[in-house]
Length: 198
Image 1 (cartoon, helix red, strand yellow):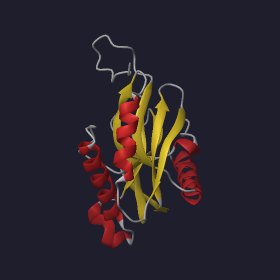
Image 2 (tube, helix red, strand yellow):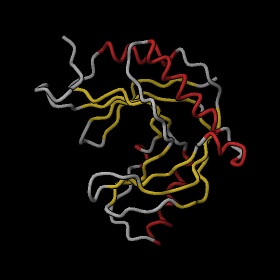
Image 3 (cartoon, helix red, strand yellow):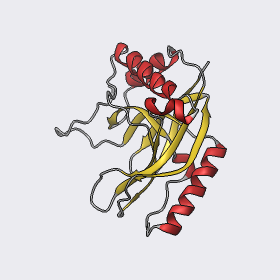
């Protein structure tokens, strides 16, 4: 019998999260580390940054589960295999905090807005195109998907809330996207698939 998405009605507690994401390349991870070092010198940030292998940009969150059903994985794989988008560049050039739980505010890199593409010199429009096409494929596979999309990359969760500010751009060439199983509370990821862009 397949495990079910936990809705809080007495089912087993969710232990796994499934989502599609973009992963920064090695040069982008190095640039992110440089920006974090500068921020920590200028601001009283006390939290530890996320591990480099956990840095990502979420495209679609498919849910939290008490064991991911095989049908969900199969549907996600079918949807991803149908995506037809070429490789493109992304650019993140602002940093600031999102609202969050008390003393645990996500500090994020932001960017990738469609309106920023001409000025940024990077094809940020394609980031939205990938997210939108993947969402349509997921819907056709009978899987829920996120409608709102705010491109961001979480750096850490800190008590301090920083206002939005510009930073030196962090850019990379997106050549693929991945499906990640996150083990909740364990800071551990397992890759369930990787799909190259044309």
